[in-house]
Length: 268
Image (cartoon, rainbow, N blue to C red; front, side, top):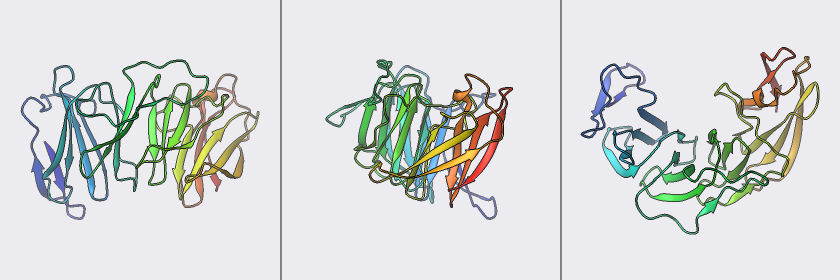
């Protein structure tokens, strides 16, 4: 079940039971089985229901726990997020039953090999459950991050940013842009905040440079240089990443000469 708690008192407000066949088995780690994402008035839960392509996604009213919509027949839930202010759910699905938006979009990263056909990102209206747009062709899909202005999709070969409501491309990367995703799960090649896209560039020996772009047009609006005071170890670009941004600050991870992570904060 999904349980709603009062944020001030911790008292239970509502309980939304799992559909038949989709309950979490006893002594099972919950994280790989049930996915929760929420922001403001939007809440979504993804459930793995056992059989192939039988998973489902439900939109839930966070105030009452009532189900708003259900998308059934989905498979292989992985990325599952409602970026702040976007009013959409972005999920990576291997399969989805129902009408697909037209035209379909294919991974736009230049120079990347053809991705696995099963990896795609589906963007769903968090209020209605309607599929807004989808894109396929990613290889080793890592993350989807974003806000109301742009969603940035990251795989093992690069990244791109699109409008949440339409899927229109905001920022296509150059051919040389390989995504430094990192093995830590909390860092990425790009992040968004305050109407800007922050793009990590790790080309120099000592400094980490961040390119700042408009989340509306993708145009370059500035750069931020950060000296982490240590020479990074060879072949550690994949361990670098932007952890978060907002309110004029950036938190960045980078490996030092021994390959260990260094955290640094910069004023944006």
